[in-house]
Image 1 (cartoon, rainbow, N blue to C red):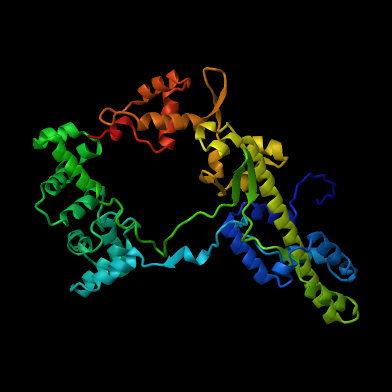
Image 2 (image 1 turned 90 degrees about the vertical axis):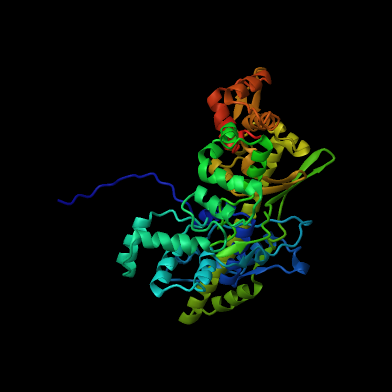
Length: 487
């Protein structure tokens, strides 16, 4: 039996403009440039202010827009609902530049490149082999990963060839094609099934009677485990050699590449990589001055031409076609106005956030010393700015700042705190810096263990557990003592 009843429900829903703003805030410079170009193409009511008219204030444009009588159009449906339904899906992108930035061309970063797959196919097509063997070779090349390794089992490839290609072959034949054709291609080391084989393929390509090369090949073939575990004394005893001989062999091994496909990409090759900072931070007379990097964010305005057209159509309320045209134009004008508002809010949010960060980390920006970093979490910046923590997270996500001491990733400025022996709160970044310095100065023949590092840092006033040392060391990409050993 159907029943009617009332139900109160408390909910929260973001307006399209708020969603648009949140998406714009998290974009970094290059993405924002792309988003801005796309919006300018999609909305003819939005235009860039020419250099001579940049002094026009947006508030006057807003007043002019409101005074055009755009709200006086009578419609049979909700214009705002129509606008929301047709709202563009804003992706992730951002752009801010200071007056003294250099010109930047997006297209100069990427250039079309040849993939490893295409490069190997070109070579295999020049080899004189049967049609079936060529198809097997092509299939093997297609199964190589971006580093040039064959990670799959040969048995699985044999099964795939039978089911998907209709080629019935044996494991021995596929092995033969891999070893005698694929692994003979350039770059040396391609088609290897593991790191040891990859290095061996490269060292064997070095036609040399050099003692160091021969020793390196022997070590890679027969003493690979001892090499990876840095059991140098075991290798010295095995081959009855001097330390200098082993050092020369290790130098030869260090010249080999563990990822021979690293110079290739599946789609493009990236060259001349550079980071475009979203903020510029300058130090003047002891004061830290943050700025938005706004050179590639031109001043926008609502098209005067479209506003005039809307006024013309608004006067003719009897024509159905004019009314529909007026609704379309009003939609574009509203979208342009909201987009300008969103960009202004974005820039205001970014500026307030970077100002709060600079205020918190003033000493660091002046000295450039990571030991000057204060413990800072997202909540600290949120408390200063009044923004939500999620907003601060979006602002610092993938953002960089150009400082007197180089380009800084904003997220690197945030860290938790620990209390030292003096009862002061210190940043974990400071502790990691001390840890890195201690390890960099250690005797590489007898590297410091984690237990030894605990004692040294304790002497410096940092009472840290061994597991914390291990965690920080891993975060700094520093291997254990055994793997840091050198001759």
